[in-house]
Image (tube, rainbow, N blue to C red; front, side, top):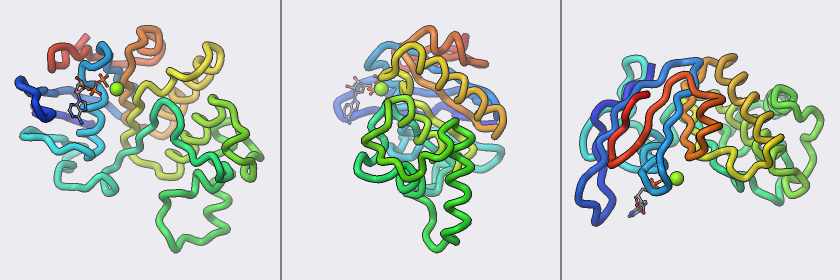
Length: 212
Ligand SMILES: Nc1ncnc2c1ncn2[C@@H]1O[C@H](COP(=O)(O)OP(=O)(O)O)[C@@H](O)[C@H]1O
Ligand SMILES: [Mg+2]
């Protein structure tokens, strides 16, 4: 269980700080809705460790995440789009960020297995620049599979996709969350993404999260 408790933060010039409290369960998608500018990305940046809170706690199954720098947190982040390097192949994009010194053959096999799991079998050597928006999000999800972190943060991940692709990528996120027991946190201002995916919901307004 991920517990975020009374996490406070204010951007420079912000008079009333955010105070974030919520829980997210393994194998479930926790959705956070809220208007543009309400603080959704700020919340994810705090969980990922890119921002440092004034006070409060982030606890994953008894481990305090706050002392950990971003690269040591059990977190993967998937953004709206453009999270791939266009001039690199799908396989290279997935391999980026893995620890160095791993056996190359084993890494290559894991990359192929991850591509198969996201429905992109055999595209290892294809350049990212030749992939569609939906395929890029699948490659990004394959990368999270290799990282295999307990928390997956999704920041408006479907916004750039057409309706049909959006539905298939949503289904994939749901299937991967269940299969790998991820604590998936989806922020979105699209009601139907939340409707389709959320086991647990919060609404962010005036700096606070309301359950329901
Ligand atoms: N680095 C920053 N410095 C100052 N203000 C910021 C910074 N980043 C975001 N903000 C402000 O904080 C508020 C919340 O931003 P954000 O978390 O990106 O909202 P959302 O993701 O819900 O659209 C906005 O008013 C935004 O202008
Ligand atoms: Mg945002």
